[in-house]
Amino acid sequence: DLNLFGAAALSKTHPSNETLNMDILQPVDTNNDMIPDTIVMIPNAPLAGLLYDIDPATGQPVNKQSRTGHHFYVGARYDINKTKTKIGLEYNYGSKYWITFGPASDDIWTNKLGTHGSVYEAYIIQELPEIPIAMLGKAYLRLGYQYYNFNYTGSNSWVGEPKKIEDLTAASTEFLAPMKKAQDIYFTFDVRF
Image 1 (cartoon, helix red, strand yellow):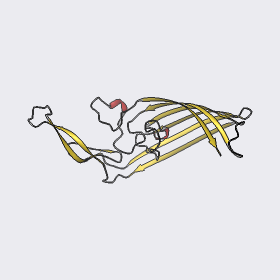
Image 2 (spheres, rainbow, N blue to C red; image 1 turned 90 degrees about the vertical axis):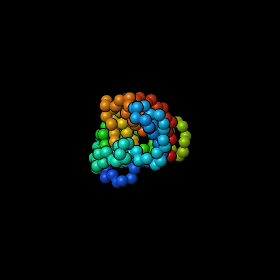
Image 3 (cartoon, rainbow, N blue to C red; image 1 turned 60 degrees about the vertical axis):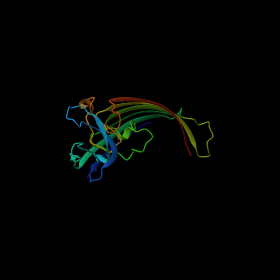
Image 4 (cartoon, rainbow, N blue to C red; image 1 turned 180 degrees about the vertical axis):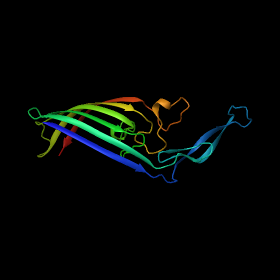
């Protein structure tokens, strides 16, 4: 049996004046020789808002505006009924301003449905019909591979303006270390009852 699926979604933001604020250490050049010679604590400094940054020099929002993001997700799975094996391929894409309701996942970088870019996945699922889990329960082994191609920073985050990965420099400041590509191999034992 061949199973196909597809899904699409839009996200729309309307940012308020709420920002992420933190105490930060700021190097300061007190004698104007272009070399920082002291560090001061700036308490409760605004850093970023909902898909926008704060200018560190002025403390004012940069490009604070409503944003629209989009996402699509397609896949195919072939079920081999005789052996209770399922083989699947999936692809999903999230745009620059796509936000998902998945930032609380156990892996902030590779939650595939929140990625700003493309994710390709291949997997095989094997039902274990001989394992008695419960009267109506089933057990499965799943082996899979995911390949991530990030186009923008900020996947799975709503804080700060997403930046194009190719435009980043060594001086670019990001909340999390930016990644261009990632790979994930997983093996799970799932029980449904």
